[in-house]
Image (cartoon, rainbow, N blue to C red):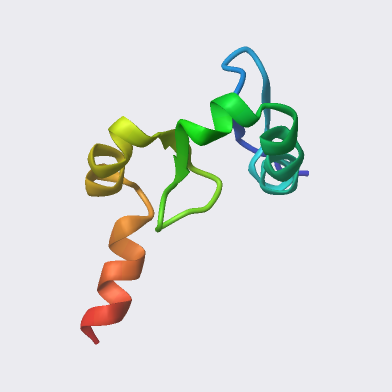
Length: 75
């Protein structure tokens, strides 16, 4: 059995969970934390990447999932 990599929860850095679970969990966190959610944005390359709006451009420029999408558009 493979171990899943744990992702850091964007609304609570002390909380970690698998990427597959985090995707579904984030919707409920946005509802529970509306003030924090207004200051956060999703990466266009991976919806599980939720970062502060101020850091979104920097994150997307260096996102590990960016190359996979960019390579697909060039073909």
